[in-house]
Image (tube, rainbow, N blue to C red; front, top):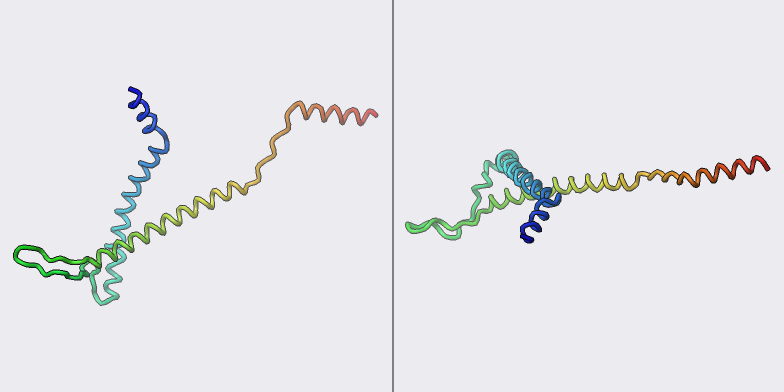
Length: 134
């Protein structure tokens, strides 16, 4: 029973839940970026380069035969994936930069001096009263 309880404590911790949410959102973000690259960015670039569809750029290593399909290196798909990676890397960089900026602002904010203990305030008042009497 101890192992199950230990696993429950681990699974319920905030870090695990935060990580799971991050993975789910990251997967969705990856799908959006893939669509952005293949459906929005690459078609105009292909037109500018003479109507090239990047996803169809391949290097044929072995022609197709009756028994087997052609063996190809899919250079265009690789280019699309590199562009997707760069977009995701840029987005993550900007997110980390924003988080660091917020953290730095919090550290730079002047911390208010804590109020002196009540006993100390009372002693200072007594001292000031004794000064005025003397």
